[in-house]
Length: 208
Image (cartoon, rainbow, N blue to C red; front, side, top):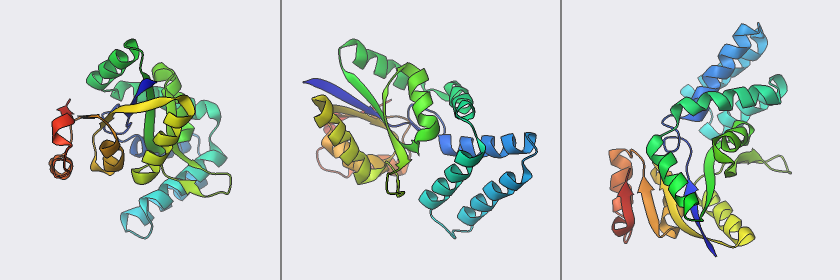
């Protein structure tokens, strides 16, 4: 049974929030193409989120619905390629070291699968668990308990054991508690405080 390294994307493998970058890139792309109707639809979603009229998950789903209508697969690939400039070298080195020792890597992220999939393929052909719309049409955000469930299912399907987690945020506490080793990439003070409060985690904690 091989060891699995589960890696968060935003704020971890990437030194930025990919969905924020995508939203700005998408809006600018629509302006450049003079698709003003689409541009104002995206801006409307951002405003609704800013004034707290809808949740982050709902906003993400709505913007990705608009993107599915107006962008091509090549557009998503182009955006994914632009994310390479934000890759964190220390996390990438940790991934390479884990793979060199025979381990498996999965990027487990709340980012949308539309651009996370081409990014994972370009970054190193890593396996991916990301937010996506299910067969029933329900949007499943890959975070918290849902991320843990999907990583656990991935382990069972591929005969792996969850050895290590790399993240920057306490949202991943369910996953952190299930791992033997935890690497924190530039965590906030709040994240450090909340994670160190959990019994037994400090002894297996490494700061990147």
